[in-house]
Length: 117
Length: 113
Image (cartoon, rainbow over all chains, first blue to last red; front, top):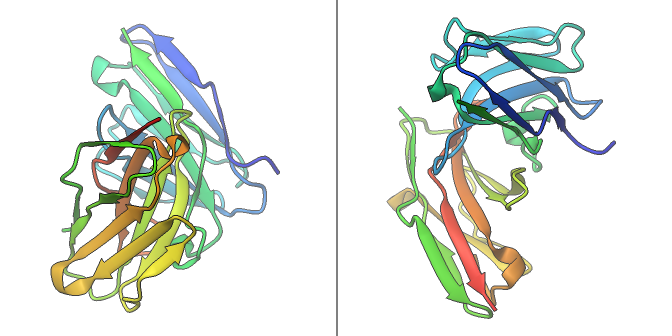
């Protein structure tokens, strides 16, 4: 397994367009997380899945954002009617249960950098 | 509420110097977890260490060492004999549950040859 994969690495879109990002976690990991990182800041939690169930969503995740993990494997994050404020790095991570109590923490992907023009 | 403060925005050192990154946290929980991550220019966050609130032992891993002091709510990170490959953004993070991390703003470390 090569780790957490995210696609695309970069996305430039015009304001008002919809975009979708994909995350492929480590295959045996049942948890999947999405974080957003703006320039000069640390990542901020958006949402997480336990298998296919979305268990928590941050208030940062407005109605324009939707995340799915239909079969408990890969996940997609869609942003509808993009705004310039959505420009950020979107990071995906995966883990086994109780990641914060394991010596390895999460495994993060390299992220998708979104630029809204 | 949980909060992580990394007061140093940028640190620049010459190779072989030691560098210490400060991390101060706030939490009302008695059980919590502290982390350090490294983010090189390629973008992915690399896990360095986890420490739980009941374990105040300092830890050393190669050139890396961590000093956890509950009395001052600090979890500082030292790189000894820094190398150019240590150049990256370093994040301290806090969690009180088993799924959500709260990150500090990060400290950019530049090691000059």
